Image 1 (cartoon, rainbow, N blue to C red):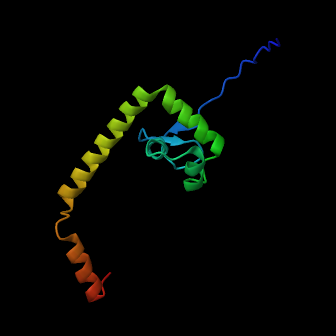
Image 2: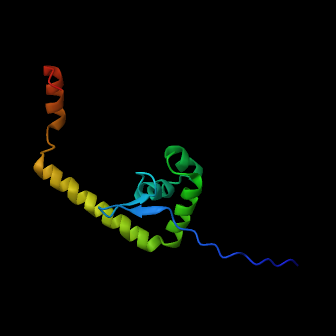
Image 3: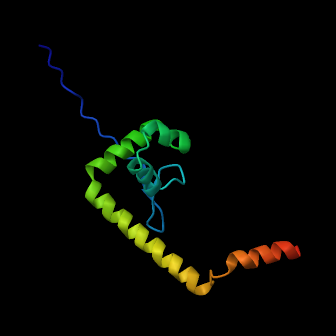
Length: 114
């Protein structure tokens, strides 16, 4: 039986947190939310790499592993992000009434002002 001592390897997860608290894949604009959502929808790492070519395949595998090891805290982060997105949507709808927007846009197009 051959016993090998595995070298101690420490890898950093390729993520950064921007000024708004959004976790992104390092060196890209792709958010952790986007990658996790694709994985949860059943996409393989290879499919995610095809959909987001800015993210190297090795990083995708690393991020999926990171998510699986820290699922509760990442799910909590995702819930906070969805809540924040909901608040922003409500604020925008309060400021800019969405009712009839399609009709207004079509009217502008017909009048040549778009």
